[in-house]
Amino acid sequence: MYQFEQFNPEEFLTSYWQKKPVLLKGLFKNFIDPLSADELAGLAQETEIESRVVQRQDNGWHVEHGPFEQFEQFGDTDWSLLVQAVDHWHMQSAQLLEPFRFIPNWRIDDLMISFSVPGGGVGAHVDQYDVFIIQGMGKRHWKVGDKQPLESKLPHPDLLQVAGFNPCIDAVLEPGDVLYIPPGCPHEGYAIEPALNYSVGFRAPNQQDLLSSFADFALQEECFKQRYQDPQLQLSQFAGDVTTAEADKLVELVKLSLKQPQQVNKWLGGYLTQAKHDLDLQLPEPSFEVDDIVEINQQVSTWLRTGGLRILTIQGQLFINGEWVDSQGCSDEFIRLLADKLDYPTAELTEQFKLPANLELFSALVNEGYIYPYE
Ligand code: AKG
Image 1 (tube, rainbow, N blue to C red):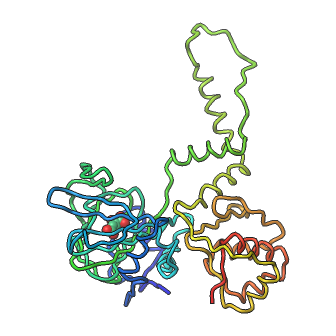
Image 2 (cartoon, rainbow, N blue to C red; image 1 turned 135 degrees about the vertical axis):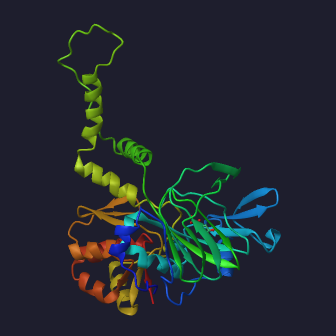
Image 3 (spheres, protein in one colour; image 1 turned 180 degrees about the horizontal axis):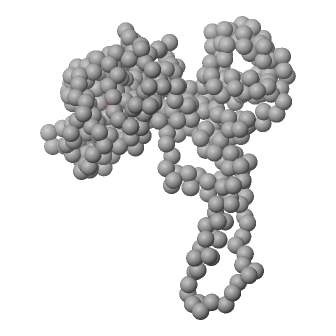
C-alpha cells in the first residue's frame, strides 16, 4: 500500500494544482518499486500493451514502437523504454495511483512507466495534461519550467519536443521524490543511473473532444432531432444574408440539446468511463451463478476491480466502461462502493448482498470480467 509522507492535499490543490510545478521531495518514504525493469521489459513484449523506445543518437532521435523481443540492440546508454497504461495489466503498479485519488477518479487517466539507462530521456517537451512523475529506482536529473513561450521541434515524426527553456526546478530526483507538472510546463529528465519513473497522467477533454463525442452520441442514440423552424419569417432585402437573429436561433438549437440533463448525463457517463487502452478483462469461464458468487465471497478476503476499469456515477446513475448500467433496486451505499473503491472487501459485500438487486448486479459485473475474486 503506497502512502504519502506529510502531504496536505488541500494545500497542494490551492497552491499548485494547474498553477505551478513543484518538487515534492521524499513524498514516498522508503519507496519500493512495484515492478522491476525486467518485468517492465516483459510487459513491453505483449502486443496489447503500448510501448516505445526513445533513443538519443549522435545524429538525432530514434523512436521504435513495441512489442519488443529484446533490448540489446539499444546499447548501454541514452535510451528509455516507455510503457503505457501499466495499471491495466499489473496490479501492484496500479496501487501507485491510490494516493493520488484525492483528485476525482474521472480525472485520473493511467500510469505510464519508463525505464531509462544512463543518459536516457525523451527530451524537453510539454504535455497537455497534468502529470505527477514519481522517481523509483535510480537517479534522474530533471528540469521543469513554468509556462513560457517555446519553440517546438520535431526531431522525429513521433517525438514532439521544445527547444531550450528556463527551468524553475533543476534537481536530481531520488527514489520516492515526486514532481508535479501542470499542463503546458516544459520538462526534461535524463537518467544518471538506470532509473524507473512512474507518470500518473490525467484526463482533461478539450472542446473538440467533447463536441465530437457528443455528436457521436447523438447519432448513435438517434436523439436531438429538433429542426430549425421560422413561421414568423419576414421578407428580407438580402437574399444571401443570414441575419444575426437567425444565426442566434441556430446556435440556440445546439444549446437546447445540451439542456436535456438525462441525455447529457448519459453521454457524459459513457464518455468519461471509456477506457483509452485495452483492459485485461477477467472473464470467468464458465460464468458464475448468483449462488457461486455468495460462496466465493465466503472463501476470499476481497474482490478487485479490473485494472483501469472506469466506474462512475452521475446524479445517481451508474456508468461502467462506456455504458449506462441499470442499477434500479440497488442500494445507494452499494453503488457508492462500486464507484468509489477499487477493491471490495467481502465483509462489506456480505452486508450489501442482503439486497438481491445488489447481488445480481455484482454477479453480472463479475461475469463481464469487470470484478474478480482475490485471495
Ligand atoms: C512525462 O510523463 O511527461 C514524462 O516526461 C516522463 C517521461 C519519462 O519517464 O521518461
